[in-house]
Length: 67
Image (cartoon, rainbow, N blue to C red; front, side, top):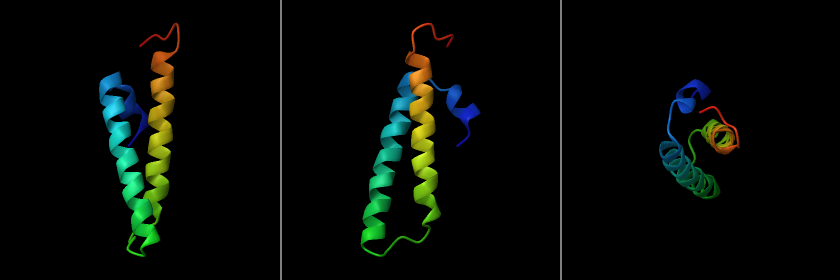
């Protein structure tokens, strides 16, 4: 997911996507713990997507935000 894609989303869409990514992150952690994780790089990608969305949410909620 690119930052340009997420900047076009509304706050509601961003919070929904964030919840979805957190569920996926949990599922990936469980898969790793049980030895079933096929793509370890996906954990890193999900973690970065979560951080990216949280940053954009913070920017949109900041006082004086232009969006």
